[in-house]
Length: 429
Image (cartoon, rainbow, N blue to C red; front, side, top):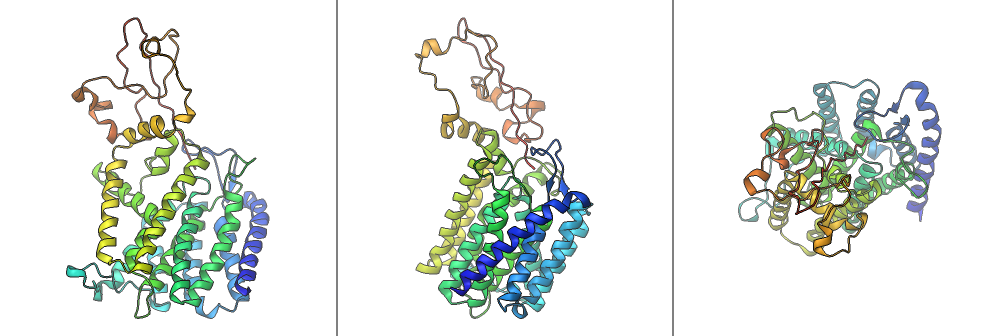
């Protein structure tokens, strides 16, 4: 009962802070402005992270958990400051990563949150201890996870929803394993995130978010998941395997790792922005923003369920890690064939958005209107020709921010007109 009251306090306080901060933000320039890569209308306040942090600090203090959370809140404040500077001025990747690493070290040394073990994924299921590598590996993994959730902040409601899914999994683990301190922090966090999502999701009657997280918010939430997952998966009293944490954060991790590999293969900076994230594939397949968030949230919850299986049933870490590697390979195979996947989703999964043509085959092939435009043209060339994309590149290697101006021209049937198929782009904030 007491926990429910604190949850409601965090929710109400964060919602109230957002309501005030979103009116102040334009005066100090803390807003996200529309651009070629962003689809929202007007300036949107970047105050979600500030409100979540302040609401969390006040609620933790009222709940009497401040002493136990000092290291976490100190590191979170540093990340909030780094993110705010990014939102206002933009810092270099080097400075940003260095300060993120400092935040990870703060909770490592003062909050006992180092990754000393990777679980039973060694030869024969033995536990893989990191030893002196624990500190550098924790920094590497921590900075990676923080930026993974930052990259997931590409659609209204997406990052907050993925964080909420991870917190659900971590909360169930903490309750099952009897970890009251972590359970209390997770409960308060979920209240603050839920309040933010009330402003950030596209609800009925609202066609865009009222506020965004900003880099400050996405850094803070990614770091929160990192801290809690580390506390629950390390030490003699751990209540879950580190491999379960991989599944709790499945989508942000797979998307980020795949993105970095593709950028390096193209000899581009891993920090260069593009539009080849998984949510872009759904948008190009004509899913709405809300549908995309719902589908990805469902996928995230499936990952949470898989991560919970060994906690309850005792499935080996080796099997769970092997499953994650298989999932990673499937994801990468899919995302490097993004155009093919987009066509499949558009034609086979999302057909309800297309007008249904009930004519006979012969009639359907006749194009009486020369101005008919197909969203996705039918591919009838030979295999060798079909694999040749714009400027000699394959279509499955094209970047979404550099698409072909037309999709392949179909070979017309007798008496029919050739139909050009321009690409329809979708941009997000």
